Image (cartoon, rainbow, N blue to C red; front, side, top):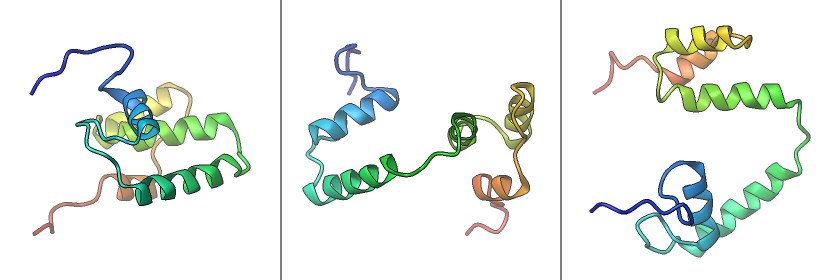
Length: 104
């Protein structure tokens, strides 16, 4: 089922997710259970009160967390370095790009 894109109610990107959570409905229109919404709000409230180490660190963390879904590790590492950020660490590579050779 295709939806027409409406800037007031986007169906793509972070804005779509945040808007759906605020309305208490999933992107398909089904309600999100109150227990899930309450837990989300509790966690987000705690996160909002957590001290920050800096915007650049958070920026890099978000790039890695989301970029790993779109780029292979070597390319993401190169892009990070080109942007004057540290490349992927071995721990990040292991976490975000697990070895799938032993997968069932």
